[in-house]
Image 1 (cartoon, rainbow, N blue to C red):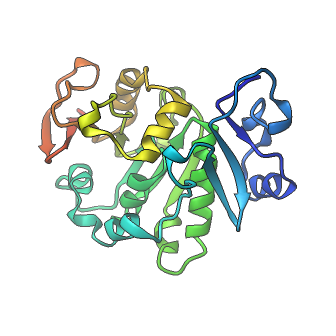
Image 2 (cartoon, one colour):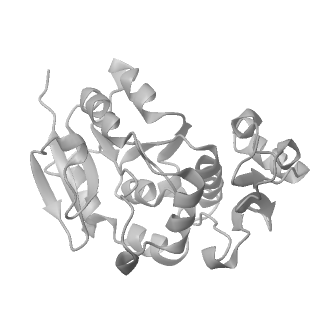
Length: 259
């Protein structure tokens, strides 16, 4: 198999995957010893200095990508979680703790923000590369005094969100399902961050995001919240009940009728 990213076949990396409870079979075909063909990978997943990292092989994509919830903007956002638009959209008028499914977890920034707001969060990520980075970041967050209480409220599930939502046990339905489909490609005048451009190169476009809305509405007991670019059409063409708008993005809220 020829891939645009590979996993460096290190004993310590395989050991780390076992510690994280990730099946090595998730990376079948991506291990460095399994590659064939003439195409050169654009990035490698490796274990270095005690962390899983995605190292781009082209300098234009920037530095190695590591999920770290205690540094930079992630830490700042968690400290002020209740002021974030996402948290306001999810909370609404609720006063009791909510159970939230983040069905498109990605690198987990919004996942941890929801955890910092006091919600119990089930994070779903389908891509093994992203799931590996996120799982490593969550595990390290559980070992740090400041982030441990938040990380303990987050459970990561690796799989396809649509299938998981369609078969969600009725007795444990979440209050809210949150969807953050990968934003459509932007013009050069508004390029996204280097890491997201790299992800776009490695993972491709999110072509089936609209299919998540129906099972999300069926699984949630209170509402579905969808993040969209501010001027983008609603997901799947389905108008929300209301919107919370910011400067560059908005949150479309779909209340669920009990029954």
